[in-house]
Each structure stands twice: as C-alpha cells, then as structure tokens.
Image (cartoon, rainbow, N blue to C red; front, top):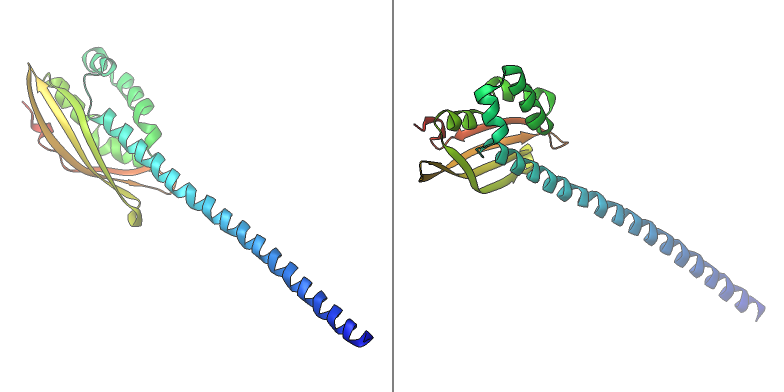
Length: 183
C-alpha cells in the first residue's frame, strides 16, 4: 500500500511539475506574443505618421497663395527664401534627400510658377498608396488652379521614397498635370 501511495505521489508530483513548466512556457509565449503585437503596432503607426508627413508636404507643395511666400518672391532675398525652404521642407527629408530635392526642384517650382502667373493653387484630394517593398508612396494629387474667377483642375502624379525612419529620400513627379505650363 505504501508503494502504491509512493508511486501515485511521484506521478502527481511529475504531473504538477509538467503543468507548472507548461504554464511558465505559456506565459513566456504570451509575453513574446504581446511583444510581437506591440512591435507590429509600431509599423502601422510609423506608416500612418509617414503617410501624414507625405500629405502635409504635398499641401505645402501645392497650395497658394501663402502670404509669406508671396512676400519672399516679391521682396525677399534668396537667403530669406532658402531659410523659408529649410524651415518648411527640410524636416521631411533625410540630409541627402533634401540636397537632391533642392538641386532638382530649386525650391517650390509649382508655387513659383503659380505666383509668377497670378494663379491660386488648392489641393482638393490626395491619394497615397504605400509600396512597402520599396519604402515608397505613389501619389495622385488633385489640384485646382484658378485665376480671375476661372477655375480648372488637374491631377499631378508622383512618388516619394523614404528611408526606414520615414524621412524622404527622393521626390519625383511623373506627371505634372500641366501645372508648370500654366499661362
């Protein structure tokens, strides 16, 4: 009888140890799962933040009149305009990306053209589609342009590449929608 009791006690002890170990592993797995979930949640938040940055940038790029910019174009110096561009656009870009943007765009090409021809630009819709594989965003920007009460609209298409931190590394417009040809 003692022997049966001893075997039963041993089996129960082993059962308790196995159960305790499996609960411990379950809670570790639960911790790993919650860590995975929170790191996965970072990605959508980062995506949302980058998408919002793209949207803000495009509104700067395609909205006039901006009284400060009008004054800079009319009466400001090149240094003052560069300071404005640095303050407004540089926070969106990586260092190299900003240099490339300024070399190619020379700062505000759409706003500069609209200002020189007395047009007003207004963003009416922005469609942004993420290309996760290439850290890029495909863009379609609906822009109204008006002068002397006459209103037209166009669609500008482009692409913004980003680095892992969501900073722009390249901006290019593949279809300018005729905005640089307005007369």
